[in-house]
Length: 312
Image (cartoon, rainbow, N blue to C red; front, side):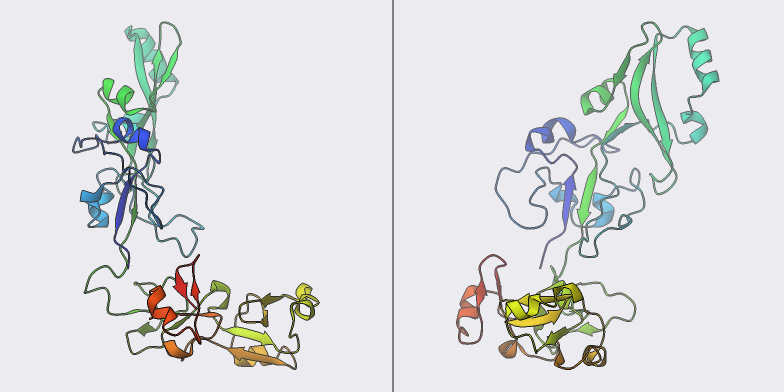
């Protein structure tokens, strides 16, 4: 299981106090996390723990775009990154026409005798698609100097509002209600939310899962190659050797047993699905054996992998 995480954009602990806080509610800066941690989100030093309960609390829709995965985001990356930008904005400007700085605007400002003015641009995707006026700097009409406002202190000194930027990772199987079933699509870690047409598993399902995402559709073994050297001779045809299982297999294989055996003689198809924990093979994780002690209690058939902290 994994708890939800709401993180402010600065990744450096030194920036938590100076570059977080503000926003629509005038929040106080985040106190930097000083304890070491591992796993997802360990790089985040500025956490908004009080806002992690839900996506809507973390990704404030008075500022953020509609929460969505980025284009081409890895299928195993469940983080919402599209509100992670830190910037200065003018909350009083709600129309694009009031956030446009064309030649006439420049001329009118110069004619009016103002000494300086803030400049920015309109970004339509923010505020749930209603748009927001991001401020980038201050221009002096006297000296021609340009001062960037990429920091919170400069932004607020100009009576603008600072958005600290936030990323969010939804919790997975972290409550009694969400820890009753998972998606049976062969992926690891297993998904809590299933795509249309994906089977759903509960505790009655097989407890072996592929150790390698390339094998989630099944392993197509080439049994004629019984050593690394023999398998390597077929490397150009897409075969790879797994030293843990001592098997030569077709890399990135997608298909059924029929597709596998159609590749030629000595091909056989194997999956992790349909096996209980006690009979997981070398290329499958034993999902139920979640600790070293449980795994080592079955050391005749299983091995604890220190780096992955999982049982094979």
